[in-house]
Image 1: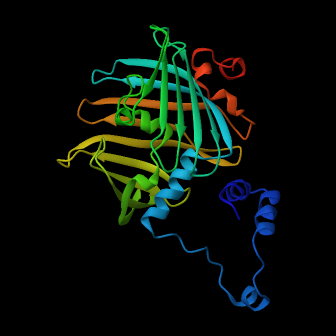
Image 2: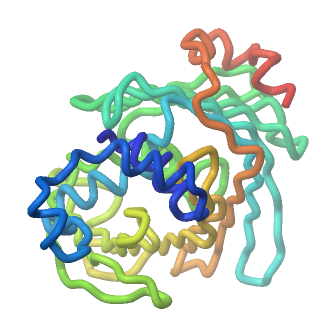
Image 3: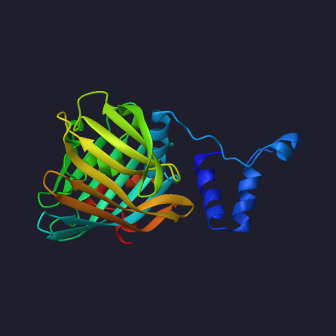
Length: 289
């Protein structure tokens, strides 16, 4: 049973619908009669391999459905509590789970970033390609792989945080199992295989939904730099979705909160949306939501 089928059937069960329960039963192979009579009611053994856990968490967070879109509200809060906001539309299309993937982001508000657009082509075995269109100077700029840790439009999220960091870029070690706010988690340390924007990352992966609930980024002196939190999780269109997430810069005491609304999956996003031409001239069906 595929991950996408599992997500859809699982939602039905959680909602307590008979249809959902029937769907789950029909997708599972039947056990031998003796086993059905004698075996106790148990769930499948949970994965213990750190790399497999991080892979599953990455797929669930960044590859739900074959494509997707959302309206995103980003709030930036400084150390004095003063806030600024950003609003944009984000569209995604996958070629395959864990493989090639494309993102297109178009800013709606406020005026100083309106019409700014950002695009990513993600690859499995080479550096991602990233572009940003800056309307103030009418310039399309290619973002190098060295800039992937830079701030995304002044927020505490990096360019890489927006589209995701592939699990194969790090070596993963399972540190322990513990609860985070009452939720059972695997705690995993990830160390980049080559020099990067951080020295190590510690991730709390929730066992229930296999999603990263918390991430801590450390520098080479083992100082905490940034903290990511998955603050709200909902079922959307059959997929478990982090609809509110935050990133805090621990040194500057600066925080960015991102909220996703009007989330849609499997809507048939066309590949021609993700072209340099559309950075300057966005498709009306994308930005007109």
